[in-house]
Each structure stands twice: as C-alpha cells, then as structure tokens.
Image (cartoon, rainbow, N blue to C red; front, side, top):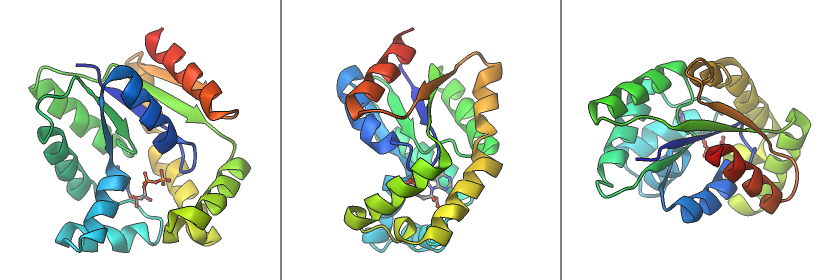
Length: 189
Ligand code: ADP
C-alpha cells in the first residue's frame, strides 16, 4: 500500500492539497477533522465529545482519535493506500499508527510537510471562516490556541518520521498548482 501523511499547521492547505493527491495517486483521503465534523453534524456521541475540544482549539484525546482512525481505515479494505490528513497530531498517535499498520503488514511511505509562516496561516484561517462556517476559524483566540497546540504537541511528530528517513518538507507558499507539483515531486523522489 501507499500510505502518505500530509502534515502541516492549521491553515497550511492540507485539505486542499489532499483532493489533488487523492486523484493523482488513487488513494483514500482520511481527514480526522472531517470525520469529527461529520459526527458533529449528525449529533453522534463522538461528535458531542469532539466538539467540546474543537471549539476551544484543543486536540481531541488520543484514545478517542486513535480508535476512530482505526475504524475509518477498516472501512476501506479495498484501498490502495491512504492520505492521512490531520493525523497523526501527537507522537502517541504516530506510534499507534505505526503499530496498527505493522499489524497489517503495512507502513507509512512518507510524511510530506507543508511549511507556511504563522502570519500567513492566521490570515488564511480568518479568510476561510467566511465560507467554511467553522467556529474554530472565526475566532482569533481559538486560531492562536490551535497554532500553539500545533507547535507544542504536533510539530514534534515530524521528528518521528525524520529519524525513520521518511520526512520531506515542502514550501506551502505559492499557487495551489505550484504546491501540488512540489508535493508530487517530494512523494515520487
Ligand atoms: P486544521 O488542520 O485546520 O486545524 P482539522 O480539520 O484538521 O483542521 O482539525 C480541526 C480540529 O479537529 C482540531 O483543532 C482538533 O480539535 C480536532 N482534530 C483533528 N484531528 C485530530 C487529531 N489527529 N487528534 C486530535 N484532535 C484532532
């Protein structure tokens, strides 16, 4: 299988780029944020729990997120591979993903990380709030909290893949097409 982790801070463009990568490589897109939002919309127990964290810009607890992720992977037995978007976001999640995939004789091929300066992230998220309807995009304090959580808990996940020789950084500034090209180049290298 071809499993790619698309990494980067909130507002880096992971969702936008996932669409192109999924078509290009014929993979299944798995965004933990999208799954949580689907559950919130449908009023499930998981949605109710996730919402309290998401509204504050905090991470949903690892235990909950990891078991949801496993269930989502198991829903696509025919997949040629996955684009993981927004997961893993903690080192514990990265370790759990590794263990889960190795049980299936599988692994992560690469982590591609979109690099975008903090000021640009903030303006992208505020602009997205106009159309996304996402409460966590509309409030500057929540945005700041998401960026702080990223720096403290998520950025270290890059090291997990760096020591495994699987980490590739990509400049996340430019047109959507330019960034797609850079990602494809990094993945195919
Ligand atoms: P963004 O990357 O713009 O922050 P996401 O849709 O990926 O947007 O995530 C939105 C929110 O969903 C996060 O702020 C967090 O509360 C929750 N979330 C998503 N993925 C995870 C994860 N892997 N672990 C914990 N919480 C998560």
